[in-house]
Image 1: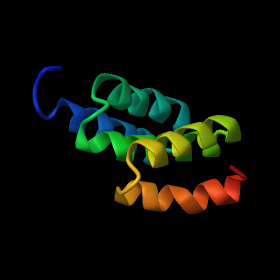
Image 2 (image 1 turned 90 degrees about the horizontal axis):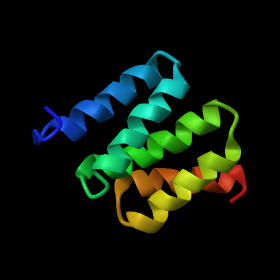
Image 3 (image 1 turned 30 degrees about the horizontal axis):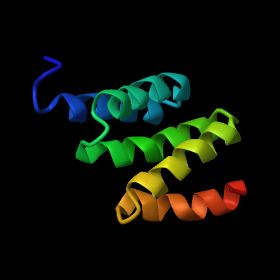
Length: 93
């Protein structure tokens, strides 16, 4: 049910499941689906954070920085952006 109001949440939690199982490549795909299909949804900021975290765990610091920076630019006052800022500092933005 891709048009259901809970679809963004379902996709986000699908990504969280992959992330918790250390399947970061699949987590990236799920979180990118959230941000691609529902860029203004409440879960988009959290999905951007988890994208950055997933890419970092995959050893891809460039993409990790890209998504964390997108988060701080697009959702500057959000709680996920607050978590992203120290990560960006650590990654050498």
